[in-house]
Amino acid sequence: MTYGCETLTSKVTDTKRLQRAVSNMFEIAGCNPPDMEKQVLRRKLKWAGHVSRMQYDRWAKIASEWDPRGSARPRGRPPKRWADDITDSIKIFIHNEALRGNLGHGRRRIGILEAKRAWSTVGRDRATWRSLIRSIQDGN
Image 1 (cartoon, helix red, strand yellow):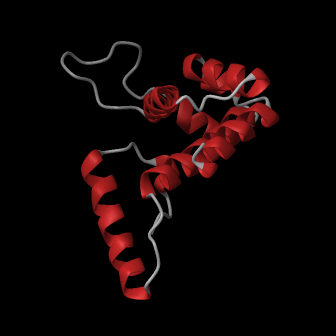
Image 2: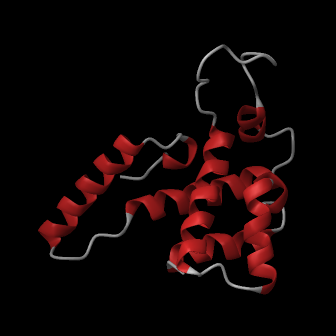
């Protein structure tokens, strides 16, 4: 059900629809459903880490950094780009973790807070990026 969610921008309605479908399937099976918002975020961040470590001649890297409209964006609310969605998702995750007091300490905390500003730079450091993904997976 989450195939391809790494490359799409998040919409609240899509996330709720996915959560409803998965919870219905798990209810039929008699299990507790996972939090689909965290699952999708984790998959997006895994893909973002792969893209940030890719060489510039790879199609996924070219497509993710390509701006089809040129340098000027149209007037009004611009369409959400994939990179903007990754940045927003990280900011929301960090805000929620800070409210719970679960940001951790040391290298993990610095890496997570740095990802808020420049995820493509932090994504190149595989260990720091994995700690961010692991913190989402564990729910810490």
